[in-house]
Length: 205
Image (cartoon, rainbow, N blue to C red; front, side, top):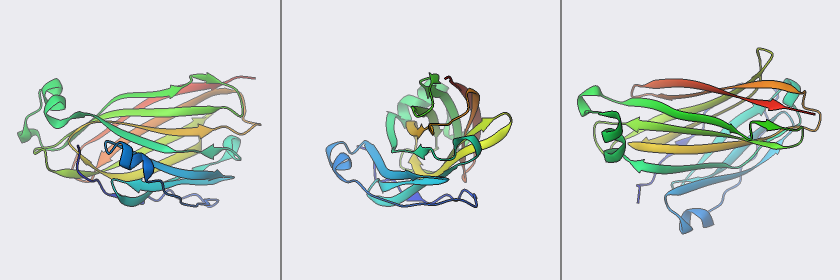
């Protein structure tokens, strides 16, 4: 069972940002390896708040432009592998210091209609010199349409070494413009290490 992790609010600067927080404890009691934040999406912005490793935290984000009126839903994160297994896969040694590596970023489904929900899934490795050490990791997901940012979420959360998977669902507004949307996902640690990957999803009529 992993140790409690800590979370702090990461600020995303949108002039129209509105937010509210809620918390859920049942899921944490039933499965300590999974932490869930519950929140409500609002026009122009959203916060997904809740208990993360027993401490209160929040995912801040906003939806702008063609996605205004949509909502950012529940945040979920789970440790898939411990540090020992992840280190073996990457041939990692403690002398390399803290490293972050995105293994996969996916939009699911890849094609959807206005009013439907796309889950932005992110899997990444956190490589640290010792198993008991935690580093503060910032996860950011940015959605662009025609080169302009129309949505962004960010969270700063304490991670111990291992492989982590997290999901941020985005429900599109009923009038979302059709076309291709680009998602840029990044992970960055104050202790060193950064990685960026991208994916796409398409809105059809």
